[in-house]
Image (tube, rainbow, N blue to C red; front, side, top):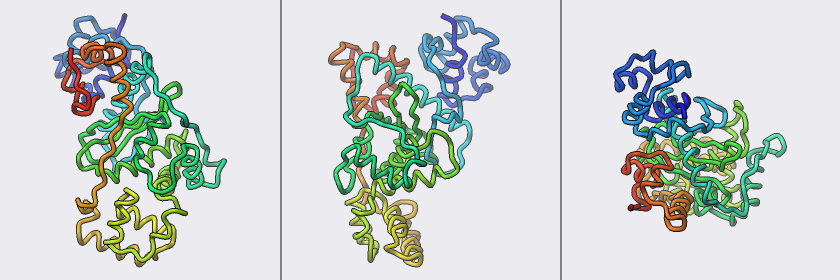
Length: 352
């Protein structure tokens, strides 16, 4: 089988390399890399072997025919804090393509069951993102009050959450929902991403997956509105958002599992505090360094995904796959990478 030019690009971008950097590793001209990625120069078996060694993918990976969604394709959404270099975003988009490829192979022999699945909810058909958030809580039969685990809610509905260290604090998550595949949410496992931010990020990404099939100037604002109502429903939280101070905010954070800053913003949006009170509280946050890092004693536990573990367990315990066979199927050549990046640091230790 001949090499697929899209897989050459995917492997390179997954490792965060430019064409020039890869050319230096392979001791070839950049023009050679460019022509192979354009499909104009079929790589030899020897070249594929060198690609495999340099980029740490098995040789047969480069012959796969999966559809690869290109950089900035509209299927991708991401929650970021500021402008990111193209190289970083390209690497993360490559990671999403890889995650979809790997998950699709796991789902060929094992399935995930869900009573309430995902469906597209057009904002034009409802009064706004808040109404959609209420509808989703109802459709997914989420109990009244704080959501115990946003990750569990998403996975119970048929989505798959993957934790991966992005190597940067500038982006919190990337998500996609490609027809024929489950919705996938890759969240940043960087230690600087706190549990409350993770929950808000997942709710924000969930809004995009459900409401935004195409980019829209209002999509980020709408995602924030959805996330606020999803995590802090107006009729359940409003009464507790009067007479706020730091001690009360810390107590409410433990209950609702969102940041103190998010609670202040929600209170302002629901008109339980004035703009002056909002500024005063945020000023106090700044004095104490809470805008960067809220008190450790108020930290919310990091939610852990389970679906990938279930799928891996099914292959090991029911289908008899060994570690090497799984690695081969999922395009890993390095067992340490397999354990740390796909199984999250030994959540499941495989042998054989």
